[in-house]
Amino acid sequence: MASERKATADPARSLAILWRTREPTSRSAGQGLSVERIVRAAIDVADAEGLDALTMRRVGEALGVGTMSVYTYVPGKAELVDVMIDTVYGEMPRPVVEGDWRVRLERIARDNLALYQRHRWMLRAETTRPVLGPHLVAKYDYELGAVADIGLTDVEMDAVLTLVLGHVKSSARAASEVVDLERETGMTDGQWWQSHAPWLETFLTPDSYPTASRVGTAAGQQHGAAYGPEYAFEFGLQRVLDGISVVVAERATGG
Amino acid sequence: MASERKATADPARSLAILWRTREPTSRSAGQGLSVERIVRAAIDVADAEGLDALTMRRVGEALGVGTMSVYTYVPGKAELVDVMIDTVYGEMPRPVVEGDWRVRLERIARDNLALYQRHRWMLRAETTRPVLGPHLVAKYDYELGAVADIGLTDVEMDAVLTLVLGHVKSSARAASEVVDLERETGMTDGQWWQSHAPWLETFLTPDSYPTASRVGTAAGQQHGAAYGPEYAFEFGLQRVLDGISVVVAERATGG
DNA sequence: CAACGCGGGCGTACGACGTACGCCGCGCGC
DNA sequence: GCGCGCGGCGTACGTCGTACGCCCGCGTTG
Image (tube, rainbow over all chains, first blue to last red; front, side, top):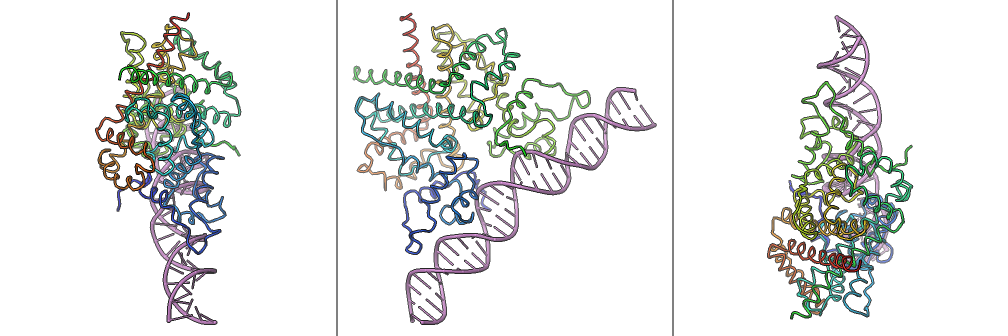
């Protein structure tokens, strides 16, 4: 009948849940199921076991409740994930930071990185279009504050934030992969590179790919040194901030 | 028995397929199934209908063959995707570019963006750890060439590349979401923002979130102007390159 | 105080998916 | 001319999301 693909969430339904916060009915006010309890349980499952382990059956189980009971409060899994995302945005700190825009942006970058580390499933869930929930809006407003009044246009402010947060996400993803790999294989990243070294050397010879071979080795050792992802994050962040400071300086002197 | 999670691909199996390229047996040399034909069909399906539509049954169908026949050549879906990824890397151009490092990096960024636009499923498939296939290695070697001999350390070269490619991926993802949304809803991004404007205004008032409201409006209009994602890509790319040039300049003068 | 209706909770079932297992039948080497 | 190996595949199982409709207990009403 309906030719709609249900692969994706219905934003309107997600928004309704996010903004309406319909109060619990008088009936089972205290101890029944609720959107909040469901979302909290789902976040706990995803934090502990990853997004693949987050099934509707598992959520029901975690709440000591039948699978289908969850559907009384949430229209489907996609919308549940939407609400989970906005909920964790609500956990983020929004301190007033002393210092200039660079200090503030750096702080924002680190806070977002910490969020991704605490909730690694966010890195995969966020792929789809973000739903404009209340906490995402609050987060956006707060973060824009870091780059307000330094001479950028509105569009540039948005672009700066997008750039910084994109870098954070890329770095977080790389770091998360290292963690996953260690969990799956039982080896550290360094051990993994070492065990694959002979295999690598059979085809990635200095003759065939001189640059890749040399740099790959160096980067691999860096990873072995147990702070590879952090280095990539720090290096990239400073580069991005340097790049932004060029525009800020232009605006300050030029007009 | 085996407590292995099969959510992820076995890298060794993927690598074996990627590097061994076992020649077809004498028997059905010409017209039978083959890894190449399977991968090509799978890429076509994913290009046309997205990663969700890529099922083993669908691949078999596209080849006029039973579902399980695919498993004769490919150990599983995860490994198939690994091979698909390396294959599309093989399609990328690797021209010798006239100009300095900045010109070369910019070209690399645009080529990678084009790749993501041609194969949007890459944006979701790549999430897992990349498999070191022959084409990925060749790509890595080529791209490192853009930043060789400008005074960076090996680790910095790797970090620069990671930074630029990360930005490309972030931008590509944002652009891809716009395309998806237009396909799903049948509206352009501008129309979508406009239709949701009244709804947005009910809670995102200038009183509650002054900055987010103003900047969001500006950014929304930018999106309506049909070149939002391109702007974000260009702006971010120039910022990133500016940031890199600061280090390059340091290295050139400092020693 | 009794009857009722409604809504929260859930059991069952269906159609996807990935893929293990074992059976065919063709065509090449002897 | 014969047998066997291998490419190809039909069936079946366990998972998932979720549509559908039943039940039961509570709050409301007469």
